[in-house]
Amino acid sequence: MTEFIQLKRPDSLSKIAEEYIRKGIINGTFSLGEKLQESKLSIVIGISKTPIREALAALNLQGLVQIIPQRGAFVFSLSQDSVEQLCQYRLLLETAAMSQALDINSIALLAELEELVSKMSEARTVGAFEEYLELDADFHASFFKHCGNSYLQDGYQNVSDIVQTMRTHLSKRPKRTEKSFKEHTAITKHLRNGKVKAANMILARQITRGERSYSDIIGLAKM
Image (cartoon, rainbow, N blue to C red):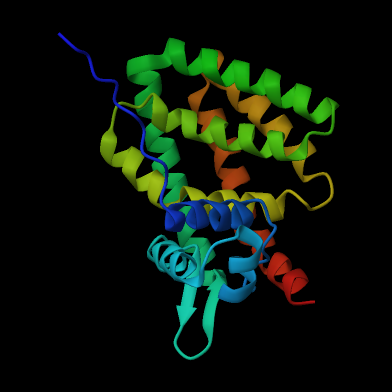
């Protein structure tokens, strides 16, 4: 009997454009509020404007791009009130996911957190800024990975790209990565020692710092 190998279909041009723009927004290549011109993106990516337009429409639905009639597409920006709501939402999700992950999968969770903290230390040592930010994102995502609750996972997935984008811009502030690394180390240590309340307090301080810093980021982006 002949066996057929299932070949992976290549991504569509619109999907390629979508991932290119998404990565550029998350890593800060595109500034908050920056206009995304179809003609320029078409040249840079090497495809026609139609898939670019489709990609921007998809990213608009995901909240990373804002399309304004008669003006065009722009990288998202948030009001101070929206940032406060986002941070509150994220804190509710992460503390719930952390609690459930500890209840049902604590061994795997703690092992992954400790491995990530070790890798974050190595990334800081060699000055690998982007790698550090990816590990930072993985640290927070690990709560959802091990929580066993698909609704919590979906809720976080819906805002994770926006959260990662904010993290990129916030981490450019002086000593921000040093502070976040100490907090991740402390959270992991507290959880290992069963001090969940102390870990939650540090997590809350880390997340809500975004509320206090975002207005400064917007000011810098407009300069």
